[in-house]
Amino acid sequence: MFIFGTRKISAVFPVKRTAFALFASAFSAATFAQADQTPPASVTVQTSDASLSALPSIGAQLSSQEKPSRAAELFAPVTKANTPKIYTKPVASGPTEMDLRQLWNELKINNPQLSSLRESYLSAKATVPQIAAPANPQVGLVWSGMPVGSPLALGTAGSNPNVSNNNAISIAQPFQFPGKRSLAANIADTNAEALLAQSEATYLQLGAQLSSLYYNALAAQKQLQVLKESVVRLEMIKNVAKARYANNAAAYVEYLNAQVAQSAAEADQFNVDRQLQVALNNINTLVGRHSREKLILRGDVRKALTGVPTLVELEDYAESSHPSLKSSALQLDAARKGVDLAKKAYLPDFQVIGSSYTPRGPFSANNGALYYQFELDLIIPLYFFTKEKYGVEQAQRNQASAEAGNISNRQQVVLAVNTAYAAYEQAKVQTQFLKDRQVPQADAAYKVGLIQYSNNGQGFNDLLTAQTQLRNLEVQLALAEANLMQAQAVLLVSAGKEPF
Image 1 (spheres, rainbow, N blue to C red):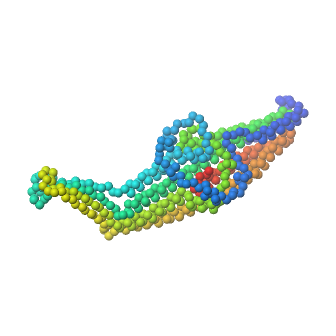
Image 2: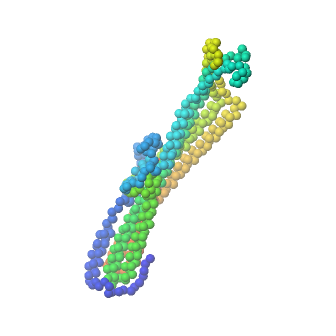
Image 3: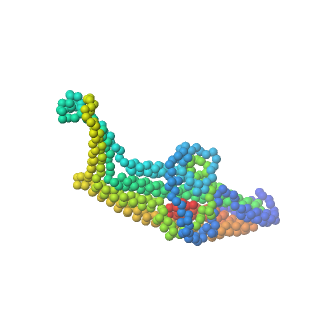
């Protein structure tokens, strides 16, 4: 908001007009010398022309840089070293400086959601040897020959000579038809690996969220830097207006308007600083740190904007290596094996029983020789194969569902890659346009306006407008660079790759 007025008071700052020309020329040179200096900042967010130019095809790079599965590293058994520290880690005494790769490593180790998925995977893997193990044997002990009239003898023990007094020890071992148990264990192992692939997909999704927060925080820091530079420029304008007013060359209201604009720029810093603090708190929480820990982000857009593969290369990579597609393919494989296992239910199971008898009752003397007995039981499916028939149907329905889900997941992944690539291209064009045309034009307009105003020219409102436009475009450039980096991270994650 500007204050307009034309009244001049010439008795406040008595300075000769001849001295003003020397002051204006010297001040103008000092102004642009100071305007060309970039205030130091802890985070550099900038782009170069080469990083935004046409990107080369790096199809060979995909195969050469492809890493082996990180499942063993990512989902290793929990030890004291990698136990999640979100509830045990105290607030750090000093700030910690991290880049995006280090934040992803913290996410992998300390995020409680990933820790939960890791334990679920290990729990599923622990069921495989249980299914593959043979059934537990059954041990039985039988004795007879109770005294006559004993409640346990049911009135027959010892009264009938045809009833023998025997002790028996038997061991029964059930067996499934060959191939049933190993196939069931194989299905359980395949389902566990599918759960691992789902965990890796969740890791990438959380990483994409972390990358967005990271680049938003960098954008906020860049906005703070732009606002600080704007405050410096407005201080220059305010000093020029003050000097002109002292020489009766400008109205006092111009000095007041410059002061108001400077205060507004300082007030904007408070809002951006609050946004930055919220972003840092969210990053700390996502990577399993205390939300109030001091965190300094280190990043450079020029380093992060490496060569991005072409759309065709990203689609091919996603179809072959995306964890979500790996999971659906493993689920389909498990469903097909489930059909084979359901068909094996028509085959009988077995039970072997070995018994040892001694003709000696617990309350009588030994009166015979020890002998053994072997028994083979056949457990056959009866009742017109009702359970088996519907079990096969259920397995076939599960297979059909898994096949449809696999096709749907493949379509969704390819569509996500296409959408992310289009967003990346749009963000790149917008950033290029702001960096190459709009920001330089606004900077030139501001410098011309400042020169004219410093040399006793008119156009104070034009100078403030040019300064405001320059500040807004610099803020837009910072946001556009952050959007570009977010789009690149989302694009690589949608293809199943880490964004570094």
